[in-house]
Image (cartoon, rainbow, N blue to C red):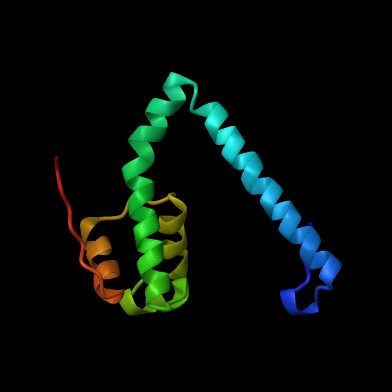
Length: 114
């Protein structure tokens, strides 16, 4: 589905898009609930939770600082694609990389083992 830039969409297009997004979220939430009933899926989901919690925190700190992926990449001496891979969960960053990201966003990296 191709969407026009927000400012050029008419009201009907905007309403239609909002309804679509609500349905997509509702569908995802109900699908997630259904999938998590399976014990194996729930176990794997639980194993991945810390990774995605970290990713969410990294994205949040970048956005709070008002940085785009490209701006953050320049600050830490990497490419935008490296930031995108990390934020999408397709990368396994080093502690050094995470430290550079934290420093660039004015955050503190804390690693714990419980």
